[in-house]
Image (cartoon, rainbow, N blue to C red; front, side, top):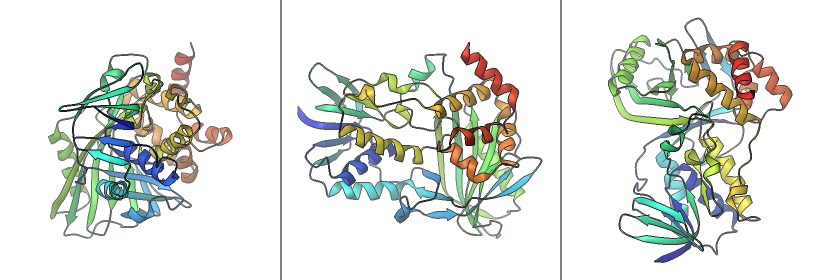
Length: 378
């Protein structure tokens, strides 16, 4: 069996981002690294968006917006995002950027196989694929195991699930400078449901019908709602250029407790997804940088993760929506109707002070969050 210093089981966002940070650091050139995934990362299978006030991955940003729209059935508000911009990255552009960089590293290899098992033994770790076995010193696992969350009751699981259509319309209906961050004016049907619209021109946009809820819908239900929204925008003629579908776990389950000395769970498998919003890209950039710094001074993965106040905030938010899923629109509208957009986005990024936290949280409905807090406390 061939031996490596590090093996990545899965090569999604978190794995590629971590390897990218390893390369940039120049501190892992003497380490043999293997990424194993049955997906060759040759197609645009997803889109990532994030708000940012730096030049993070500017070379592959496909679109930026200075403004965003928030709406529900009662009001609409145009949000000025400065100093932030809302940014979009196509999955394929990110894959190509990192895989091209990897191809120039003699110590890093990509294997197009399916991982079926991995384990930590007494003196080494082993990774099994459908055809071969490999050994290593440490494993970075990004293969999400939903059963870990579903088999327990302490931390509820919501899902951010969506279907998106990239469309090109005959009518010029989109404001290319404004992204629709959340439009809750769609029928809620007892859930948290909204439309998400990312225009790239007056006639082109990505429209996603999105839910924060326990259960998925049939494909036809998502697409029927997208069709309704397109008609509502006044679009009579259009073509569907591309489709995407996703399901992101929203939970405060303590994934990191499944880490061992030599195996770490990363990405959604490690709790790197922002539980309260499902946003992943920015969180993964932060965690991967922390992990690379950690590796340069320590070697026990059980010591990597530390809880913070934002973990508790996310936990309470998930508790509230899990118990009463229709409250989502009310919670977000309480923030965005009169709140400072910059402060809200800073809070959602986990970068606010405690005083700033209070300014945001005091705008939320008090009773459901107080009940959730005291239930957790006692």
